Amino acid sequence: MECAPWCGSQTNTSRFCRYNAIRNFRSAIGASTIILLAHTTDFRPVRKQGTSSNNMGSNTGSRRPHSASFGLDSMACFNWMHLLSDEGQRWIESRTGEKVRFEELYALNLPWANTRRLYMETLNAGSIQELPSRFSVEGYVKQYFSSFQSLVFPVVSKSLFEKTLDLAYGPRSSFGSASARSCVYAFLAVVNLFEIGDNFQEAMDCGYFASAAQTFIVQITQEMTVDGLQAVIMLILFQYFLGDLQAAAVSVSIATRLLYTLGANSMSGVDSSGCSQPYDKNIEECHLRDLFWVCYSFDKDICLRTGQPPAINDSYCNLTLPPDYARLQDSNILRDSMSIDSHTLPLFPWDLRLSKIKSEAYEALYSAGAQRKSDSEILSSIRTLDEALEQWRVSLHPDFRPTLSFSQEMPVCANLNTQAVMLRLAYYHCVTMIHQASERGRLSDDCNEGRLSGINTSTSLAINAGTSTLSYLQTVLPVVEGECFWVVLFYAITAILTLFRNILHNPLGPEAHHHVHILREVPDLIRRIPIRKLTLGEVIHLRFLDGFTTELARLGACAIRQVQLEATGIGGTPTFVSSEEYPL
Image 1: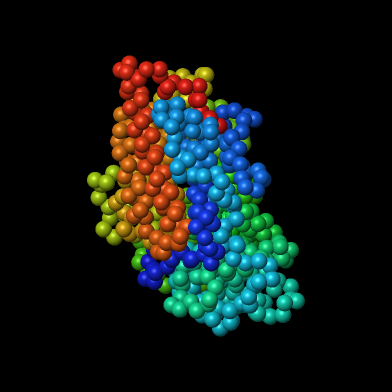
Image 2: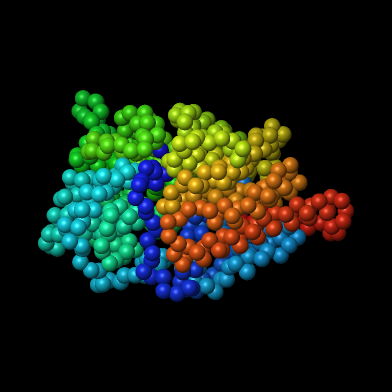
C-alpha cells in the first residue's frame, strides 16, 4: 500500500500541530521555506565533474548543505536553490527573454536557510518537564492500537511497550531508562500529531514532545536498545509529516545503525526447519522486523525526494517480504475497517514492493556508480526498471490499479479512498524518476538516431506522468485527508517543475501551450490541497507557492512567445540559443 494508509478509514479528524515556537512573522517564514527546500528534488545526471553551484550564502557564514548536483540537463524537478541561483536565473532568462521576478518572492537576508525547524526551538536542555502520568499514557496506547495508524506505522508493540513504560517510569539509574523515556515522548508526539484520542489533555503540543524525545539522542546511541530504535523511528515519522526531510534523513541514519546493531536487517522470519514463523507482534523479532521495514520505506522515499544517498544498503539486508504480503496488501487497501490484533500483518507506510523499486532506481540511475555508466547502460537500466514497475502495477487489484496516464475526462472509482489516490501519485512519481534519467544522453556526442528515439520516448513518459499527476489531483483532492498535505504538495511540485523544465527546453513542442495552461491552474490546485489547520508558517508558505507557480506560468508563456518571434524574424537578436546551456 502506498503512502496513504495512514490517512484512510479514520472517523476522527487529525491535524498538524501548532508550533509553540511561532513567535513572529519572520521565523514563520523561515520554517515554511525550509520545507520547500526539503520537498523539491534535484535529480539530474551529472555531466561534469568538479563544478559547483553558485553559493547562496547564509546568515551564519557556514557552508550551505550540499544537494545532489545533477545539472539541469534532465527532465528533473530542479530544486529551488538552482532556480534562485545566478546560474539558474541566467538559464531561464536566456530562454524566456525575461527578467526572472523571483526576487519579489525570495529575500536572501531572511533566515530561510536556517535548517533548524521551529519545533526544536521550543525546548532547551534542562527544561524538559516530567512525563505525563502513566495512566494517561496507557490510555493513549490503548487508543493507538485500536486505530488504523497502528497498522500503517507498527512502531510499537502493545505488550513490549508495557516494559518500555516500566523503564520510563522506573529509576533513572536503570540501564535503558533514557531510551525508554525518549520513546514515550516520541510516542506522545505521534499520537498528538494524528490526534489519536478523544481528549488530549496535556498542555504541551506535539512539537514539545518531539523536542523532548530528541534531547535523549546521545543516550540512545550509547544504550542501543529497542526502545531507542522505536524513539528514533517515531521521530522520523514526525519529521517526515511536517516536511522536515533533512532532519528525517539524519534520523534515518541513526536508526539504521541501531537496526544493524540489533540485527533487524538480517532477520529471516523462518525457524530452524526453514518454515515461515507465524506473525506475532508480541515477539520481539517480529517487532524488530516491522521496525526495519518502516525505516527502509522512509529511507528509500526520502532519498528520492532529497537526492541524497539512502542510509540502508540493500546488500546487507534480508529483503524477503512478509509471508502472503502481496495478497494481504491487495485486500486491505480496499477495506474501510478491519479488526486488529497482535497477529494482524502491518500495512506499512508504503507498498514494500514499490519501496524496493525506488531503491533499485536510485542505485541504477542516480548513484555515484550510475554516473560512470554509458548512455546505453543507462537506457538499459531504465528499461529494466520500467518493466519492474509495470509488473508491480499490473499485479495490483483492478479496482485501484493506476492507469498509465490520467486526464480529467477519465472516470474514477465511486468508492475511491485516500490510499488508492496516494498509490497512484506514487506510481506517477516513480515513472518520472525512472525516465527523466535518460535526458543526460541527449547531449552526448555519440547520440545516434536510435538512441535519441529511446530518449524521446522516456522524456514523453516523464512529462505524461507530470500532467497525469496534476490532472488526477484536480479530480480527487476532495477525498484526500488533511494530514497528507505535505506529501500531496511534494507530488504537485515535482510535476510542476517537470512541465516547466520541458516548456523551456522545447517551447515549440506540440504540448507547450497546454502545459502553460496547466501551470496557470496550479495556484488554484494548491489552494485546494486539504490541510486540517493552517499555522502562520503554512499560510505564508502557500502564499509563496501561489506567487511562485504564477511566475513559472508567466515565464513558460514568455519562452513560447520568444521562440515564435525569432522564428518569424521579428524578435531581433535571438536569445533562445544561448551559451547558458545547462547550468550545474
